[in-house]
Length: 150
Ligand code: HEC
Image 1 (cartoon, rainbow, N blue to C red):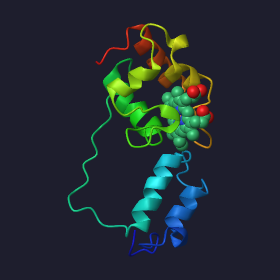
Image 2 (image 1 turned 60 degrees about the vertical axis):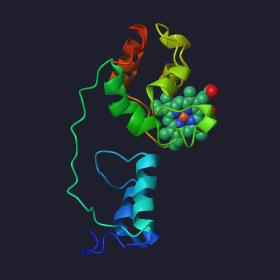
Image 3 (image 1 turned 45 degrees about the vertical axis):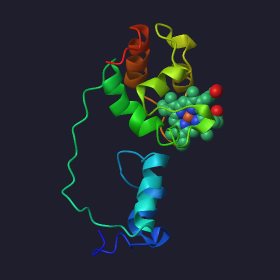
Image 4 (image 1 turned 90 degrees about the horizontal axis):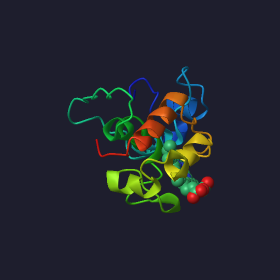
């Protein structure tokens, strides 16, 4: 990416790769989230270092109504960039089971802020894409089934 000129270390605004991603021209399948864009920008700003070890991408568990799946498929990538232990925007964090449970009433999705703000489309905020119906159903079912640490 650096030798092709797509990424100019230390110069995010001058990097064609970031320009096309921030303008939502890439990837063609749909825009990256605001969190993903800011991670990419920070990496280029910080010198666009090459990885010191091979990058191992762990496959995500299938989406389902259990905490482990929701943490890896939804809360981690789509909520915790703005809501975490260091930066708990609006007082909420979604990076641990204990913190997620502060916005959950086990057995009652419609009384759980986690579910209501996602279901209304309020969260994640624009321009991030809202959660899809499969993700919303998995959250709702997980809460209905007791919101276990499973
Ligand atoms: C890009 C940053 C960002 C992301 C990503 C994000 N949030 Fe938020 N969230 C905010 C901001 C800013 C507020 C406070 C302003 C507001 O309420 O609109 C907020 C507020 C909230 C609140 C409090 C709302 C209230 O009415 O009290 C909850 C609950 C919440 N977010 C849940 C989530 C969940 C769940 C996700 C993932 C599905 C998520 N957020 C993703 C930025 C974000």
